[in-house]
Amino acid sequence: MATNYALRSPLYATANYVSATLGQFKFRILTGTTVLYTIIKPASSGVDCFIEVAELLRDYLNITFDGTNYTPQKISFEIRNTPQTAAGVNLNSEGLALSGDGWEAYGLFTDGKNPELPFENRQKPTWLLPEKYPVTGTPNDDFFVYVPFDVGGTVAGISFGGVVSFFPFSDAATSIDPSTIGATLTISRIGCTKYGTGRKITFINKYGVLQDLWFFLKAVKDISRTNESFQSNTLTSSANFSQTNAPTKLFNTRAKQKHTLSSGYYPEYMNASFEELLLSEYVWYTRAEDDQPNSLETIPVIVKTSSIKYKTNLNDSLIEYVIEFEDAFDYINNIR
Image 1 (cartoon, helix red, strand yellow):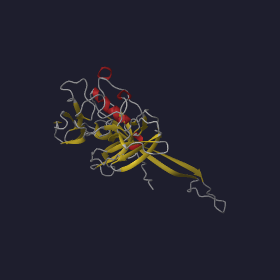
Image 2 (cartoon, rainbow, N blue to C red; image 1 turned 120 degrees about the horizontal axis):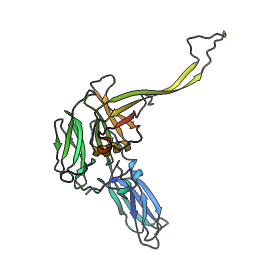
Image 3 (cartoon, rainbow, N blue to C red; image 1 turned 90 degrees about the horizontal axis):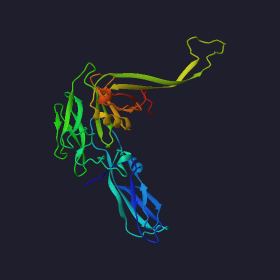
Image 4 (spheres, rainbow, N blue to C red; image 1 turned 60 degrees about the vertical axis):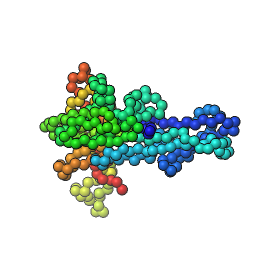
């Protein structure tokens, strides 16, 4: 059974050995047969010796998204330890301190040490999505996604054995219930408005998997630029100057596009998805190409909105979020 760890939260590997001659532990961090790191840490007999490895493993995650491929992105690892004297002489054979799969996921403070998917005391199998609350039917069955009519999608789930998989659904599906998940996912269809069918944001959620979130209402795009300037000497050798040759010269002009999207009206329990979008470090926007409006392209973006106010049916009646995104690249190509 695979154990799935969240690498955006600390991950500790612990070793303990009783010997009067113990001076240190040699830790080896491996993926497959490849040694990524070797760490030597001083140790005392009978006292836990631990290392924190989350950021070290996270360096080897290659998070990408091309608009279609939702393949889980993880790193399978082992952390092995050998008790040694202070001079580096082995006192015993190498043991296993920790192993599992690491994800671009995070636990909350209340999830405690070494949080494991799916967190929050939820039982496997389940969908790797926020669960509707309060639960209205069979526990583990209250999961919903909101997509336009005639649009398919992909959703992640985790099996009883800890295997994370993605499950596609068709453009006409209203629910899916894979045997390995054992829980129904309801697909709520949203009709088009004067703003079109909607705009898709894809992000790495708290479970470390790709999730789509649709924005159904108003979209605003703007561009801003920065540059530097200097004063040049335009005087000629005859002590004259041209009125068409500007003394003030510009350089290092850079530009960014921003996109402000309105979500449309969502139920209160979807607050959790907007929270996870806000906290995600990997986000993509699927939009119409500037020069070919009938073609779509997927671009990396940054969530510029830095805070959201949680909305409730009691306080706000209709729940809508407006989120600002910025392209994660310069508008003028300057990659050299």
